[in-house]
Amino acid sequence: MNNDPIIRVRRITFSYGKRLILDNLTFAMGRGATGLLGPNGAGKSTLLKILLGFLKPDRGGGTILGTRIDKHAAEIRRRIGYMPEHDCLIPTMQAVRLVTYCGELCGMPWREAMQRAHEVLFFVGLGDARYREVGTFSSGMRQRLKLAQALVHGPDILFLDEPTTGLDPMGRREMLELIRDI
Image (cartoon, rainbow, N blue to C red):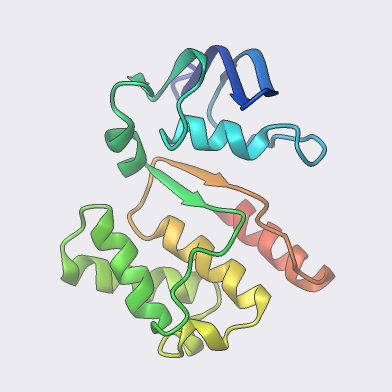
């Protein structure tokens, strides 16, 4: 297996107005599971948004899978599955249709996206609920659905932002087991 870093960040600085969030951050990350730990407001979600090209750093830059984040954000996003911290779900849409739609947004043909949607919904434990409207889901089910939409296109990398938020102890344990399986 290649041991080269898959993510490189070099001297990233980012501020929201006058509030400095990331200050000259540099690191390299290899393959495997890595967690970003820190208190609320430490800049973890902000860093993920910079890596995905949703935010532009004040200074610095980096690469993901050898691709520069400042030049090719759309290409990088096609290769990453992103499970955001906050819900990004359409409450009136059936789960299978939502996950299919997310696959289509990543460039998958409809038929392939629909097939993969069924597969990942079963994988995350929502197979029986796949035809229900998302608005009827519990918070634990919504977390699983966000994971399914991040997996549907078979990404090279997963960014999971607070994947256990709002889960009870059993739901948390099950989510962590799913993540380990991935």
